Length: 182
Image (cartoon, rainbow, N blue to C red; front, top):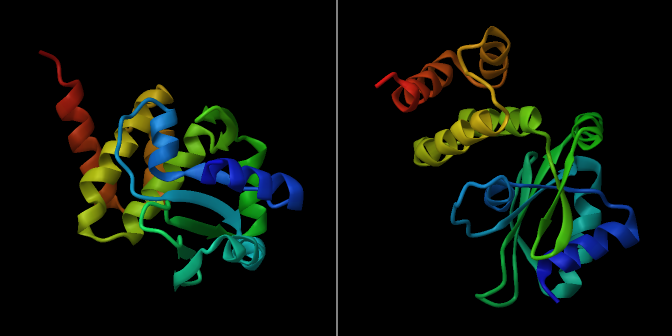
């Protein structure tokens, strides 16, 4: 059984909802991207429950902050798992508009494009410069998937709300490079 199947079973059997985010979710949206872990968005109130269910599988926490818990498996080939934490109200809003997908023939839910975009922009703001190229690429792909233009005032407002003016400018720059008239 795959770890993704196990995660889905833990979720179903224990009423522990999650949304798949990160590289695997981007792959579901058609962006071919390598990833080294499984990223799950979960309510912060459930983090210890998730850890309690993953520990018997050999997973151990190697990094924990208010924003996430990172776990590694017992074997080198096991996917590390990142639990990205949000307050329960935010999770409910994201879950209400989440969209279904299938990964390795396992039914999974990912955030709606506008929510995923907000998460990615926020992650870009919080992450270091080593994340910039990957996250900008993800953001451009999310904009294209959602038929969104970053110059649209509503989209600009969202970019500025979750990012910074500099991030918005960077996204505009890369968007314009891809969409300039030839």
